[in-house]
Length: 179
View (cartoon, rainbow, N blue to C red):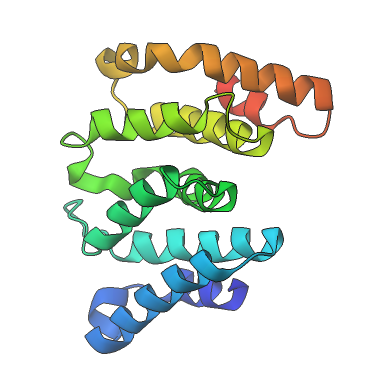
């Protein structure tokens, strides 16, 4: 997964360099790997590879050449399995611009994805990742007047910061929130 991600980051024009059938195979196999992997470290590496591939599949005009990835993110965030939620959130943290030109169309759905993952009914890890993903997305992808749309996520983000501070193991949520 790490080598594949590095390979992708070194290919300037993935969509024009790599044959379409190989592109499709890569997409399908990465999503399958993310769904089947149980090792947390490997899941993160696979998620990073998926994010890198999604970057390659985003056209210069912001058009997403991999629409299935958006469906995959939505399904993962609504999964009953914590590890699938983690996959989606890792991908969004690694590439918050993954929604491309469809971001405006799906902004409410994106917000609902974060809201569902930050709920106390989820594991602490999912809540921390959701807070990071939401903060990263808002900071990097949302224009200032639309910040208010995400205001109801802030209590959950603040709770996640409290969890992180108590555990003293991860300050990335706080750093992301400060940004």
